[in-house]
Image (cartoon, rainbow, N blue to C red; front, top):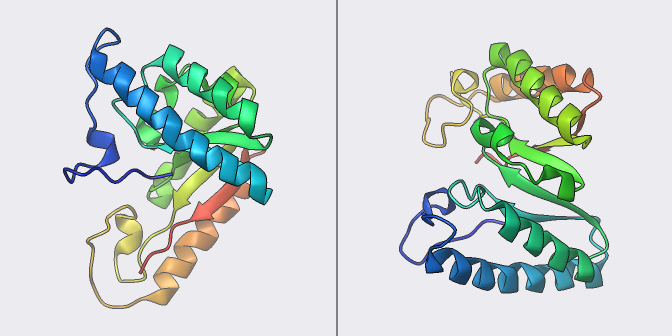
Length: 188
């Protein structure tokens, strides 16, 4: 689930301070209420997996609060749980063991993917959880595979570059047992 902040901030820019800060208590109280609503919907609809958050970079450090939130979600929702994060922060979470899947985005140039896979293997081995790429892909234009996460990149239409990139990305991931899924971002 992505959050749209009223002040226009990205969810990754939400700043919490430290655990003694009243902001973090209020934030988790509100966010727990928010996510439990979606947990109820997911349970009623028979949804297979629920992501309890996405890219909350500055909030991910609060282990006790996340574990508490996950416990409350599990009381309502019986399916699989994951959390989606920015790949650069993948090793910073210590509460992966409370979830069913480790998940992060994967906007890598193809020559960088093998280094990313080494990081994935380290985290999945440590927590004994499978991994899902929550976002991968590139735009369908010339040069996009050299900067796959650039939303603003705009050049001549090139469907083949996008197709080749995805084909190669998926082929490399298919060789890795720890990677259990890939979600392709909807590039317009």
